[in-house]
Image 1: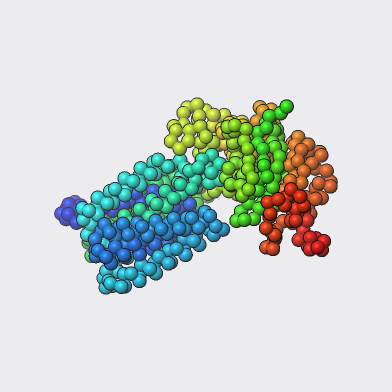
Image 2 (image 1 turned 45 degrees about the vertical axis):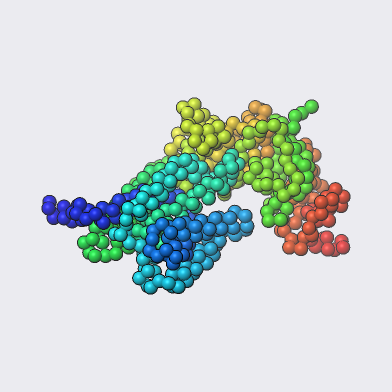
Length: 290
Length: 265
């Protein structure tokens, strides 16, 4: 019993930095995982990855001017993400180009600019920090920021839920009954950027998208309703954060990759074992007549 | 005198400076049942998108008679069938004009959805996932959504595509019921025999109006021949349309192919 306590509870009970890491990453899951579900259902999973790269130059500019300070880096990231999201969204809405291509173009420009900015001043350690984050070094300021982002995200999702579902399912229908189609699209892209920026202090710009996409992709194998998919994704996110932090603590591994890899393991297991996964499809030899 | 539901004034609709519906004038009477016919690319779907307000006119405009509640059924291909939703979720979208973004769906609304599903022969399908429906069942569900919308003007874009004969006859009965209730209906249809049998009025489009009015009159062989000669593809070297042009001689008559025009020149 004591061994189990040492394994699972003690790291969080004994160390303040572990408590803050746990609290921060659980809050991140609460906001990012439902956003990831909609990102996946809109077939924009890879666009999430692109957006994660897109926030780099803003974060880098903040870092360049103010050093390793969470607020300027966050504001910079938000601005860069907003420019890329709005730019790519506008190009796809008002020209013949689809969003995947415009998003790729904008994020590549943004990524190159970001790497250039970091290399102007930083050492490779700085670059590693921006790219991979440090969840174990979350301070109160960072936690407050993540809390705010989660509150805005959940509020927006609750407010626009019906429109988000309609925009995914039948966008032309939504445009015929409401003018909310385009605004909702941009609000949603805003939420993606916000959550990626919220995650980058903890997980880095490269991996913050992992907590958004992997739990959502895994949840798809367990349920067939959007609402329950969001709940399952959040639970998977929680599990990944707890396992990842424990793994990081006990095996002295970097915490960001440990969390994302834990989510990856759940994803792979879900492909196999999910109620809508491979095993269930193979085992179900019996079938109904209609 | 019949009341007008919709009036088109020199209406031009299109995409990226290319006109798909060109200088259309005319009116749709209140309570009329009109088939919109023409070859692929003749502007039928574009016209419906324009009326539904999904596409803004490049020139001219559409006048509606006061407040008109519109129900628009896009082509099935616009719908994401893999989206994790149930039949009842899809049909409930029809409550949007009444309840909007935040309005609560009342017991009465839920009853309306249930009755609509019964009316299209999908009673008991409420909780079925969309990706398990056949093409015909999905089309029935979409008609149920139109029923729930309870609209004055109904726009149906190719509702009979990839649907079996029995479903087609059921859906036609439903359209006739709406017509009997005094609703105004425009339907994009490809099957001209069906149009002759079921639609009192027809608009024959070839990017612009070829003929419009009584179905038998509109579908006369010479009109169909004119429409058939319409060249489907956009031409890169098509001249720019001048405002006064269409009132006189139309230099780029869609019923005239590029090669014919060059030969004539």
